[in-house]
Length: 185
Image (tube, rainbow, N blue to C red):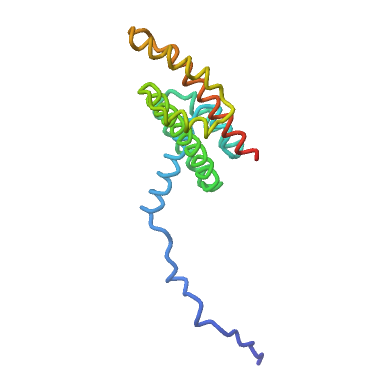
């Protein structure tokens, strides 16, 4: 008789009947989540879509989905996109979408800051001038004062806020220049 070598540690292995597969409902929920992620990708414009790292197969499916008008066809295409995302894994796509969202929130925050500065300047709050000088020392304060005076005149005469928009554009350019300078240093 042959000696069978001892194979220690069998009691530590999990029997096959105790390994739990995900339920059918769980698989459906995951498939639905991937389809929703695909819908979000379909709705992105071309510039934002190009910033997302994805295989060519998925990109082609998304571009095709934008062209489909039939309700049943778009449903099947969404399912295909969800299947492709499940196959490749959604982690990188979710990460890239989060980066896009963060960029959007930065732009909104920047816009609110600039609007608050302009409102305070129109209310003759001189402390804002000090904040602006401290934040962006190289900007043209004379131009800001001129645009501010013109915007106050336009407001008093019920004219369109041409100077206020010009002031906003100038402050935004300086703000973005300052941000780019901070990122390179």
